[in-house]
Image (cartoon, rainbow, N blue to C red; front, side, top):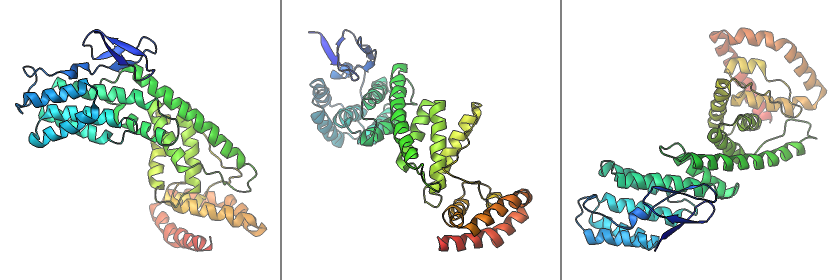
Length: 358
């Protein structure tokens, strides 16, 4: 009787006529990992020293019957007797994968089991093949998840774990890029609407959600697509301006710098990002602290927008400041001693006053 396998991408039946590692789906072109070679064990070719042939054959039978919960439980029991059995570790990893692929909660345990099995087996093909097949199937299954919510979070976790591993099929990499493009298109629609709704604001109030910015970074890096990289750069700039004092902001600045460097390496011009009714930065504070994304600079900008801009005297002060401060900022930026003095005598006291006022 000819064996069949369901395509993990489209669900079509695949005929298994040989022991090839991957079966190409005739309908969608997806390479599917062929696990049928794990339905039996030839202890003449593979032996992990446990010498329990019947126990190992029982694991192989559980796999053949696709009873993955039994495979998982029996593998765990076998490992209690023979902790060094890398064959049982491999079967346990396979059982963990097939019983948890709906939410991928077990994926780190699967990786750890396979890593240990590879080390103990001295890189046996039996284990390496299982690892490679799980990685490729995981990527395909992840691209079938929702493009929002928990589905997206789980998919990004899988991409981060497996996409850059060796022997990932090009067809599966294409599926990941197509999925990521769909995620980007949804985020772009939602965030552009949010930006439009802030159109009547009298200050720079547009603030894209943190989780959206983080997910955009992941898919920008995955796809290496200029449009997505530029869009992330714009969104993260808005978010940093609005949340400069948050505990996570330095990590977000690092992600922004990563994308900025990547775009520069590709000779792509960085966009000039301006929030709604956003005025220039704090020149002296920026010169002193070295970055217009520094939390103190962002706090001072917020004070300018929410306090000074709201009255005529404050707006007059801002006008005078922007007329004369660039000259002093240039001098400060080139002198470490002046930077220190400016920080101690101007920026820190001013920051303390403005944050209390806010």
